[in-house]
Image (cartoon, rainbow, N blue to C red; front, top):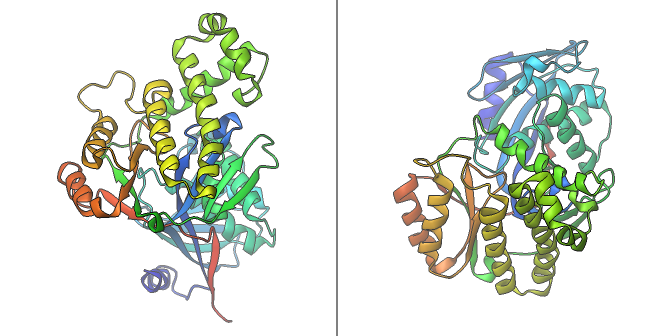
Length: 390
């Protein structure tokens, strides 16, 4: 793929690339919709990646050709937020250039094995990739955490999508990490050295075939409703709310914020605590306890967080169908849960190796060939892969 990308760069821009950069997709392992409430998460960078062949162009212009998309051009003297660009590649490029103070234009060809809508966060991988490129070319020298924070800021302000910081952080830092966002400007990031295969399980992501398009309102409602609960206590986010106080004033909270918001808050309190328990289980080598917690998180997401079925959907409940089939194929072993934002995209499963082939065959018979991805954890985050000598 790398050599083909460099050839694509040459064919497009009629000169050789100077650099090759890469950023991985991510998988959320624990903490579903906890990050935007300044909670805890458990996540990992995966072996699928977004890669760019890059060369400076000596102009005040950034040109990016992403596979499957038209050439995108952004001028460095025009980096203000444009609401009409919300949801576009141009918005992400403009925001990253602004955030790094980039003064050098560059050309780039980008390709990716992190498929859009896959639940592996192709947007975060692209943001981290751009941040890594811009930090290198501008001399800003941003570290992995700063690049992740920039990516979140760009997605919030330039792309127009409310999101937490987990996706960008997992892609930028690499490996398996647990993150505590209690102090959002100084998130506490800890690495975990763990091999799922050594415990006899494969990490699988199954694409349900449902698209994330037109679901922004569904995603936005989750942090909005959680914050509505926090507001009853005079707080901004649920991490600042005492759980005992929440249950003591449950009737008042229901009246003020509504029952779905209350259920989503219950999910936050439990899943935030589960992350700590998952980390402890992995560090103790208690994989059975870890799997139990994954299943508990999945049930909580479905019942309380309610991010498996889009509001009002009846004929199309792809994630629910995928979870039901995965549980059937696992037969009480392993674990499965909704993956990432939910409502569409993917589910996650930890599959015993002796069941892997039958599990994959069973899922792909229903959801299509190639829908079950067997992943490995990538130790590196966003990186410069190659620099061509001048």
